[in-house]
Image (cartoon, rainbow, N blue to C red; front, side, top):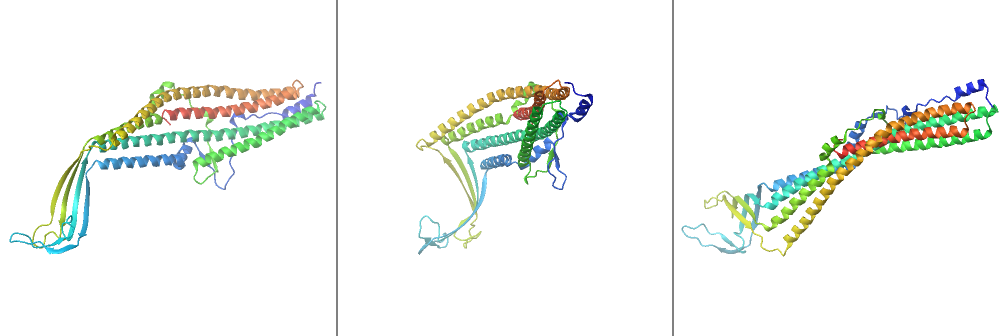
Length: 452
């Protein structure tokens, strides 16, 4: 039966749906007495780089590798040291005879390997080692430094993706919470509407029961959305702040979704990919390790130059007036002859590692091409679907409004209204998830090519 115009007019006013929908304001965190920090995505990335323990650990490894390279380079340069020693040896009790042109008699040491009972050594020593192994070691540490630098970039890339997902995950959770609030309010208004219509004898009590169930479900969804939002805030706070600060807000820039550059741009930038650089540097390091081990077959030349005192008294001149200061030089050529195959075994090990590193480099090159196309297709699909999801949410909002009006006019059932409410909630959530998906896909693509 048709309802009265007065009742219909009152019900329409009571059940008008204010679908803020896609532009709902995010709820603010609990106040701590100070204004909350407002963070953009770039602010969040800066804080994460500063406070992330895994990222700082990667930077530490890079610093250690740099110092290894410095030490290997220093090994190629001449070394200078100053040695001081005093040696006392028990004497034999006899003295060496002296002649007219011989130095004064001195006590003979009991140990024939020692030069005198009292021996003073104060000399500067310059040493230089020439060998291909040292050069190969230096090149290897330089390649390992490049590996560590690339791994630090990989850690930074993973951190960017994590922060982007957490940042927009919090925005999506806040938007879902706002949507759940709207859905709970709409369900409550519909419950009030059905109760009024029941009181007017226009609907059955079963409609009120269904509306009450729907309201209960929406209240439960609201609590779950609150829990998800709080969890997303906690996860992001752990990433960004060393003091676990939860009093912050994030800027919702999802309405300004960036456009997707063409695939050719990412292809040109792919050479900056840190995974590819790490694999390439690892292959180079393995090659230099092989060369360093092969250097064990070749001679090594060592040059030494000494200047100072090596005498029985600590003075520039001896008691007899001779000058104690002097110099000596030596050259040592170490020619390897036989070591029971140890050098050959080291060469075989290094060659196995080199071949494996080359295989990993080839795999990294292929994987980069595949990942780039896969991630581009993902970003392209997410971007194209974003407009559809937004349109679906707008249509679901209008559908709920019209279905509610039809229900008030007696032309729709309570099940149709409940279905429209559920469709609107799902459409809003799908749009929010679509925003996070596109942002994460774009971040993955940009970090894959080293542009973010």
